[in-house]
Length: 191
Image (cartoon, one colour):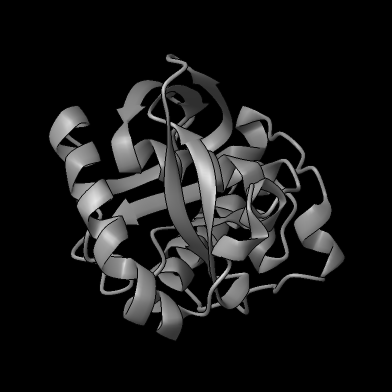
C-alpha cells in the first residue's frame, strides 16, 4: 500500500468523466492494489471519501468511510465502502444545504444542496452487486464522491458563492449553526 498525491482543483484529471471498469479489470492485482492505495490515502488525509481521479486514476472507483473523523466530527460513522461503477439516484425530492469541503479543494468550504436520500447501485471491490439506500449527511457524502467520478467538484454545485469560506472562518463563524442543522438532519434520517 502507498499514500498517493491528491490532485487539486485546476488539474484536468478532476474534470474527466471517469471510465467504468470490467469485472476482469476489477479483479486484477493492479486494481486491487490501487483500491488499497485509495483507502490508505483517504485515511491519511482524514477524508470522508476519496474518488479514484482525485489520485490521478480516471476510473469509476470511490472509497467512503467515516470513523470518528476529525475533519467532520458531526458526521455519523459509516463503515468503509468501496463503490465500483456507482450510479446514484435520488429517492426523494427533499434536499438540505450541506457545508462541504474537499481534499482536492484545500482550505475552502461552501454550501451545496444535496438530496436527503439516494439509492446507490455499484459493485464492491470483489465485483459483487451493492444496492444501498443512504440518507441524511451520509447521502451527501455519497453524492459528493460520485460527482467526482463525473468530473465535478463541489464548487460546481455551490448555489450562493457568498457561502464560500476558509476552514478557519467556517469554524469561527458558520460551524455552530451548521452543526445544529446537521444534528437535526441526523435525528430525522438516522445518518
